[in-house]
Image (tube, rainbow, N blue to C red; front, side, top):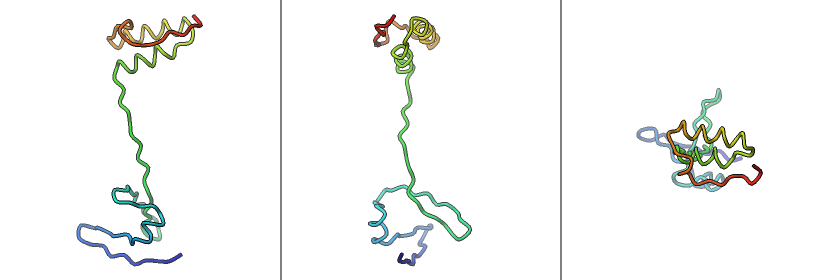
Length: 98
């Protein structure tokens, strides 16, 4: 394992040598986590996951499409109404089991 010397620049910038960037697949824009350790600072790639924000209509679709029994469907209808929506206006498929 080769060691590299880095220099902290203005505003705390650090340039990671090209060999290390290639070896670890670090491209421009890669997010890193700086983790304090007793022996120094550990830099490691961060995992960024996109988050989907569900609209009330999308929530209603989930509720209605996932009902398996007649009782669950009735419960889902009630929950959709609590969201202030008309279940008849929500595109969904009723299970053929009830």
